[in-house]
Length: 153
Image (cartoon, rainbow, N blue to C red; front, side, top):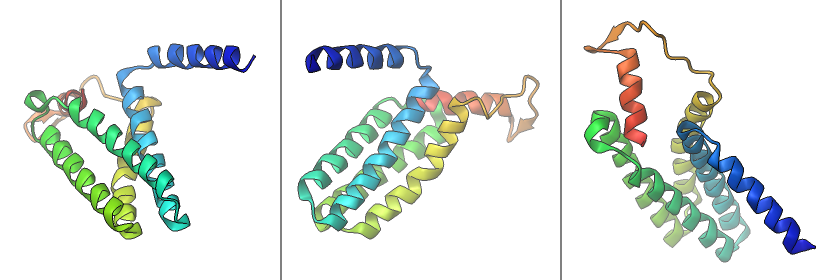
C-alpha cells in the first residue's frame, strides 16, 4: 500500500511541476535554496555532519541549476550580476562546509532572502508590468523586466 501511495504522490507532484510557469519554477528554486541553507545552518549547530552535507549539497545543486539557466547574452548586466552572485554563493557555501562557519551561512541566507521574496511576489502576480512603461536609463521598465526574465532563463 505504501508504494501505491508513494507512486500517486509522485504523479501528483510531477503534474504540479509540469503546470508551473517559468517564473513559478524559479520562485520555488529560490525557496528551496533558502530552506536548504537554513537546514544546513541548523545541522551545523546540532553537530550533524550528514545532514549538513546533504543540505549544503542540495543548495549547491540548486545554485548550479539557476546559474546554468542564465542567458548571459540576453541578460546583459543583470545576467552578469546574477552569475557573479552565484559564484559568490558557491564559494561561501564551500567555505562554510569546510569550516562549519555559521556566520558565513548567515551571510548566504541574508543574500538569498530578498531574491526569494522578489521571485515569490513575481510568481504570485503581485508585481505587475505596466503596458505603457516609462523609460528608465534609456530602456522602458517593461524592457528591463523582460531582460531580467531572460537573464534567468
